Length: 396
Ligand SMILES: *Cc1c(COP(=O)(O)O)cnc(C)c1O
Image 1 (cartoon, rainbow, N blue to C red):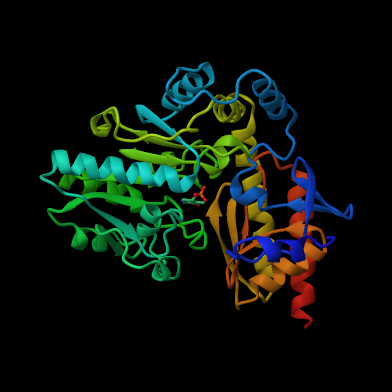
Image 2 (image 1 turned 90 degrees about the horizontal axis):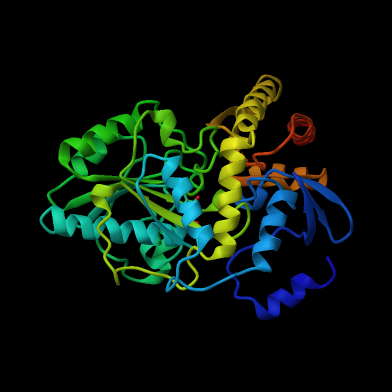
């Protein structure tokens, strides 16, 4: 650890509490701290490191691109950018792409796009219905769409035009829809909200309502997208297509990239409406292209399906054995163990002591989101550690 925490405390803005761990390198699902201790990483940069740490293929693509061309701005064309855009369109139900640099920015873009669409096509409508416990980012627009008061309250008046309803409640969306409504904004599974999985027909019924009303469905797949839930996009499992989809996190495998994807019919941006200096630069789009290729042709999606079945089964074993576990939920390699009391932070700390990084996403919920390349042995090792921790905690 050295004196990094003390140095940080004097120069960093205080925006969050870190674990007392300085990580210096990674390989696959494993990371090492500055004292040489290794950890299985079931946080993966918060569902970002989709191909594992120091993936040799991705590292080669990034190194080659870094020594060729990093940044030219969007005043010019580049090959990696068009190649990734074509791949995303080819492998999704959407027609058009705007690149950006993070999940919050992707949602900013989606919000602007939906507002412009509503103003043009629905008689000035600009309201967006979003959900309590949803998470869409920390910028002023994306946090205005985020239904968690503590993220919003310190910052004065929010951008108007957002209405919040309970997640997994179609009737609430119907009741909140007015002539002012332009769109509904949802996560297919609420990630930061606690890995909340809606009823199997929820997205289908929301889609039907949006069609009936002539409003847009925006899916925030920043966390669920790019293979995390076992299909390339989570919406596939609901048998629907969104009008707008936002991506970030796993898309770059670790480099900062986001994207707004849209159907042709609501792709209403015109020159000058939106932009970003870095967005879709050759470095991040070359990385994104490699990630999508590994998912679609490199066997990574198949691995997610196999390993997620294994993880689900092993966690079910814990449900049977431990009085501290009340259930599990999730899809693919976005999974949560639900505990009978608020001991998630204690479980995560003790797991770290035994060489496993997991995230206490709620006071009683531990989240698992390993790299999509995680092996069968690593899943077993991780669940064995949780098993030992639960035994230790139960023993007091
Ligand atoms: C993480 C996350 C975001 C925000 O992404 P940033 O890259 O941190 O801005 C938005 N939506 C969802 C669903 C997320 O999980």
